[in-house]
Image (cartoon, rainbow, N blue to C red; front, side):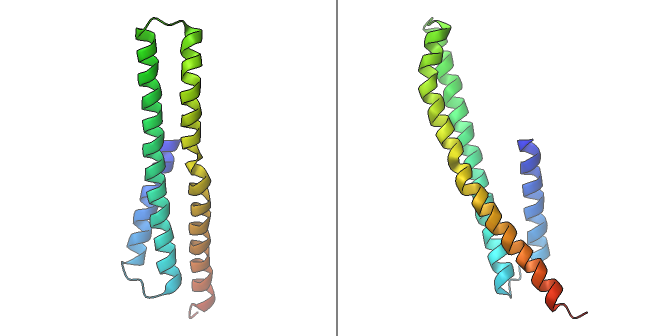
Length: 119
């Protein structure tokens, strides 16, 4: 599901940049594209942080198994590290509001186009 989300985000971002034509004459489209770029940067950052946290947990588990610790001892050791990984997932508390801001700017752009279009 995350890979689908990433694919759609990259595709949508590319389509928005093509739609904008790299010509930002108006304020709202400029703000929407800026918000989109911030959301994309946030998503890339979050993906990197989560990947690093998962890799750290796997490495630590392998180290503990190599030390011949019991499964209970391994789980106790990894519990503290998993809390750190959970905290790293909290980047969503930033990513989701940024996404909502971007969606609001995009919606505002669409509404203003419909209102001021010379029908």
